[in-house]
Structures are given as C-alpha cells and as structure tokens.
Amino acid sequence: MGRVENMVAIVTGGASGIGRATAEMLAREGATLVITDVQEGLGEEVTRGIEASGGKAVFKTHDVADEDNWRQVVAETVEGFGGLDILVNNAGIGVFAPVVDMSLEDWRRQRSINLDGVFLGVKHAIPAMAVSGGGSIINISSVAGLRGSPGLTGYNATKGGVRIFSKGVALECAAAGINVRVNSVHPGIIATPIWTKAAVVGKESASNFFPLDEGANAVDVDAMAQVAVPLGVAGSAEEIASGILFLASNESSHMTGSELVIDGGITA
Ligand SMILES: NC(=O)c1ccc[n+]([C@@H]2O[C@H](COP(=O)([O-])OP(=O)(O)OC[C@H]3O[C@@H](n4cnc5c(N)ncnc54)[C@H](O)[C@@H]3O)[C@@H](O)[C@H]2O)c1
Image (tube, rainbow, N blue to C red; front, side, top):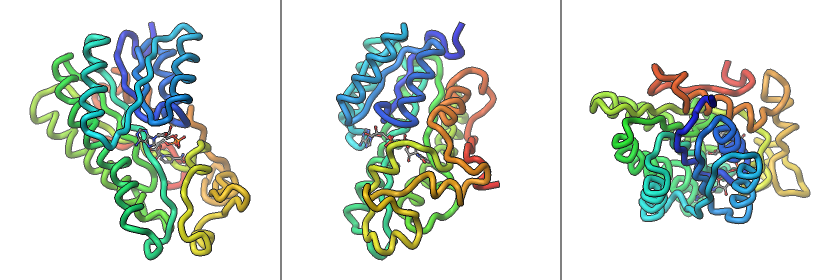
C-alpha cells in the first residue's frame, strides 16, 4: 500500500526539477498524476517514464498564469479520474536583478507565475477537493519567502506572498469546515535547472550578489551552496519531494497553515 494510494494529484511545473521529482515520487506511492507544465516535450517524457515504471500519469499543457487554463485542467482531472485529492503548486521562475535594474514587466511576469498562479490553483482546486471529501494543497515557497535575499527582491515578494496566502487559505478552509489542508514548503538552495535558466538582468550588479557561471549566464549553484548552506552542499529535488509527499499524505493530517523548511540549515 503506497503512502498516497488511489489519490489523484496535480503537480504544476512537473516537467523539471522539484516538480518532476515530486510527480515521480507520488506516482511510486500509488497516486494518479496529472503533470502540467509549459514545457510539453519534457512533460511528456516524465509521464512516459512514470508509465514505464508501472505508475499512472497524464500530461497537460498548462500556463499557471492563465485562469481559463486552470478551469480546464481541474475539470479534466475531475472528469478523467473521479476527483482531486492533492495539488502541488510548484511552477515557478526566478528573475535575478537588483531592484533598481528590474523592469516592471519582469516584476509582473515573475509575480504572474509564482503568486497569481498559486492563487488560481487554490481557487479552482478547493471546490473540486471539497466535493471529493477533502484534500491537501502544497504551495512551494522558498527560504526567500522567509527572509530577504539581495538580488532576488521580486522573487522575495512572490514567495513571501505564497507563504502568508497559504496560511490565510488554510484558516478559511478550516473555518468553512471543509477538509482541505494548505501548507507551504520552503526549499533552500536546490540543484535544479532553475539556476541555469534564470534571467540575470543587470549582470554587473548581479555579480555583487551571486557567483555567476560566466559561460552559462547563470548562477553557479554549487559555489553558492558551499558558502551559503551550513550542510555545505546544494539539496536535491528528491529531498524536497520527500517533504511534499509527507504533506500530501494523510500522515500529516493534523498539519494545516504550516511551513515546512528544507534548507540544509540556511535559516537556522
Ligand atoms: N531550485 C531551488 O533552489 C529552489 C529554491 C526554493 C524554491 N524553489 C521553487 O521550487 C519550484 C520549482 O523550481 P525548480 O527549482 O524545480 O525549477 P525548474 O525550472 O527545474 O522547474 C520549474 C518548472 O516550472 C515550469 N513553469 C515555468 N513557468 C510556468 C508557467 N507559466 N506555467 C506552468 N509551468 C511553468 C517550468 O517549465 C519548469 O518545468 C519553484 O516554485 C521555485 O521557485 C526552488
């Protein structure tokens, strides 16, 4: 018997990194996965991998910033699999830029995915979960939602928003007497493709805050982890997925409005 046996789960941003590891782990533990992402090719690859190992998964192309797209994903999940038990709001991007170099357009683009996307997921999942008798929503914040990070202030704003939004929604669900739990997860520095994809705006100033991998126009995650993580290494996507699995399962049935920090000691 898996830890999330027969549950139906949506994982956004499931084509890569933490979302991918989470989808694979939930599937191994018995859940049926609806993997969503804007990266179709990679998303289909993750789905095929899960099916090849005997798990159940489908992929849906999905921009989390688009409300109609959310309506469709939730409706198709309920129609296709009979309900919705778990939502992992994981899709996210990082825009590195000192605040004085950040354009309003970049600020809004990051917010539309990292914060508006979480709002829309929560808004459309709760009614579907309530019909299925309840569920668990896990919103991926960051240590950057707990304390300031120079060079990542726009990201700070979105992740701090995700943290306190999660607590408010948790209390709203509890007060309404619907059995939907809402918790946030706060990863530290985790080795995933986000660091190589991240747009470094105003590079001269950004290098004051981050060790840059010059060739890749990206942050050097291992160099940063050596300095910033007390355990001395970057975390893995699987180490975050383990925490998400716990919050998704009934093992965490008394947890709502909580924040699970998995950061190698960064915030200790
Ligand atoms: N890697 C870290 O160090 C770290 C630390 C703290 C928090 N996080 C958070 O963890 C989450 C996952 O990040 P990751 O490190 O696995 O990065 P990643 O880049 O490997 O994965 C993020 C996924 O989100 C998808 N995505 C981006 N925009 C989207 C959109 N509009 N709609 C749907 N999908 C979209 C991407 O295509 C990608 O597959 C993010 O919310 C990130 O902010 C990561």
